Image (cartoon, rainbow, N blue to C red; front, side, top):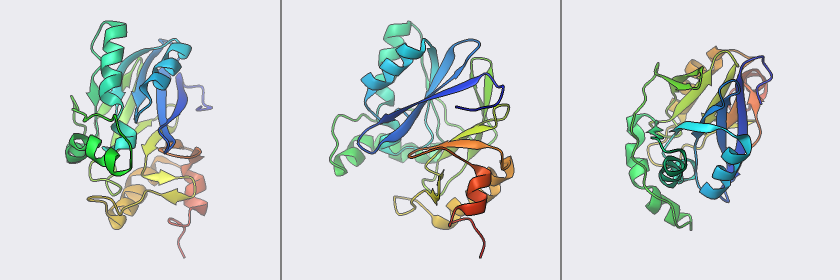
Length: 224
């Protein structure tokens, strides 16, 4: 949870055997929310939404890998039925469209079934914004782990949802289709670290950290 006086609140719902950090981000003042990276276990995500008492306005995707996007389609349908209004799927950058269309096949290669392809209703580019209640998230295109990966940054809360770009003590893998190690490092150095050392972030897997902590101690970022 961001510790600033911002209205942003974040609840994490780990999903799939890969323990992907699906998050429910919401405006405490309006109880309007977005679900970021619903990778699976939709019933578990819906239970979290119910417990928080929020209304979901949109579903946001950081990138097209199945453990981050595989539950987006059934979640959209369930929320639209429950809430009685449209809940669009937005993001990532269009360069990840090939991953979203192949979610079922990718999941099957890992031994998982029941995942669905995803059709984004709004592709995002660097500099776009998305709203959640009265809050605005800035979109940063951060390729490398996948070509269309994006990060969602909320400047007032000094908080970012970074998907699989960077982790506490590590960075995203680049041995998957169209991954690139040099591009990933450039995304971190040119897009994320300039946000400021005080910025906290939720990665796609594992614990939260701050950009300052990673700048100082992450073995992939510390200069020799």
